[in-house]
Length: 353
Ligand code: NCD
Image (cartoon, rainbow, N blue to C red; front, side, top):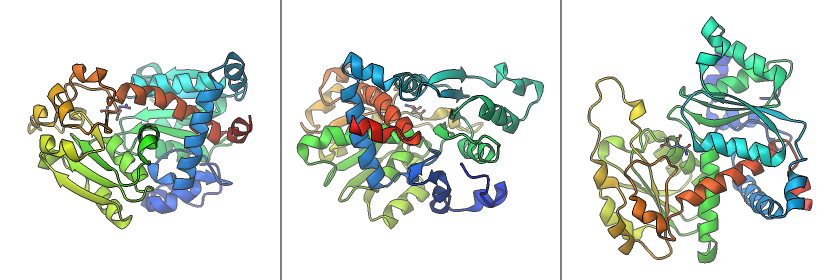
């Protein structure tokens, strides 16, 4: 957070509800840190949608791409990814390259001074001396928030983007998922009146949690949570949706639910979060999309997955035009370019170009 004047200590800060916290993560109407999906209201999502499309268009010409790469060419970003990542890491790396931001990465605490006993807070303070932006993925829930808190109190505060924190949130994945849904539904009247089914390990999947928060910004949608009972969506999210008048339901019958869905969001078993001795992993085949399911999928529906996939979607399905997961990957890069441009206040210049 930007202000050194935030009047809280860490314990007081963490005790605040997220609806209070988000007020400190915006500076002069502009998002400063990206920690939670709840920071994004409909107006901001609309702005990012238009901005993302504009950036894609500008980058199609050599002159446009060159111009984009001058916008933030004096900035440097630290990609601190202490948890496995292929797409999100490369996506942020590429997004920074589009805007001319120079990037350094650290992908393991084994290669940092934390091995010598440096605290992770001091590591963060070091980042603030060299960089203008911290993008972080961490196995600990709440790490990005801690980073924002510590960096806000340094002499040189820098913004933080949460690229995945434990099993809690992954807000930039949710932004690219919303972008993909909106683009896919442009020919059929937008998100209004659509049924979005989320499938798999919903209890521990951070992408579905973050996506639910964003979907609450859209009217007349229905969410169907499809998982084995023991892997159902958390009560906190279900209560949030109810409070925001989003219709939701739960089922453990995947195949029977396919024909009603306008979007199906598949996820994998998140077994890296198993606690010692946990053995009740479910029969993934019951929650997998097979080639024969294409016949019962609506012609206008889309099939999504944050990736990485295991066996939840058969590779044969990739060729179907309704398979959107590789397009999600590409959309992710553009969405992140738009987000970073907004953070640094060059979004107006892009829209005026
Ligand atoms: C997801 C994640 O890391 O949460 N991957 C991603 O960023 N696209 C999904 C997952 O790992 O299952």
